[in-house]
Image (cartoon, rainbow, N blue to C red; front, side):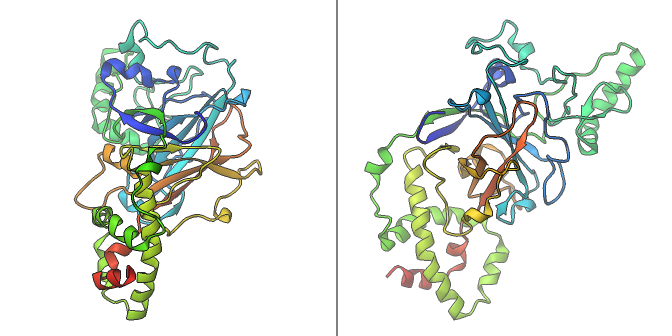
Length: 391
């Protein structure tokens, strides 16, 4: 990662290019199974369960982010996991349905060669592209999610699962039948691991580019101009209205006049922040990642639920945590999570990591993630009060 803000974009990868998303090529990617960096100290099934529903979290994305001035972090990757249950995203704030882990290795290590990986495909790209069953150290990986799989199939004992939920899913997908067939034939083989399944998010490569400063020259709205901020942000606010549940609208009907007036005053400031967010991403509206470990902080989608310093816990080593990158709402367009009912949703996800970058390749260090949602004020606030607040 270079100095300044780096932007990440989702790029589709065909079967012939899938080799680029494997561990040996140090990828940044969305969805599929994690391409683990170090092979020791992987987060276990308990650590990867949702903090609200306790179901297994799916791999959301990983970002390859080495630190140039740290020989012990010559290779360094951040891994983000997310619950598949939409109801778990109703509340903003820390963790909940999300978790993030960091792992790093020096240039000289027991897993990867010191020289950069070749840019051309391996001699047998089809073989290299298949999901691994085990790490080279022998630890089994879950056939469904690609995380640690300490629970073996009770019949063939040759495949692993992270827990009973994924074993049941794999049996429904056909492993029970194929397992019985292999046992009857006595050939000792195991059915191939499908590349994709309904638990995994769609897989994309993340391409990284530096943010260009054009947005400063192209900005046509003064963020200090409350009238302009309210009017210019109205269109995108309306696009976000569908994300607010009907219960929020019902609650508005019972609010007294004093509460509505307070909401009207708050909305003007909130719209200013939202407008600045909109302006900043306008030049590259498809960005899904904003990375800047040292320097500029995150851009917020709302004036509500911005964490204070006391809300961001120190690392287990005692060092403070600093902003490293944020995940943008545009990523939701690639995840196929929309539904007629409740959907996975966020305004932005902000990742904070240990300022001292503690740890080594023998462990995956859990870091901190904060979820901020879009403000619901444009839905609850009557149009008459919005007009008065902009005068």
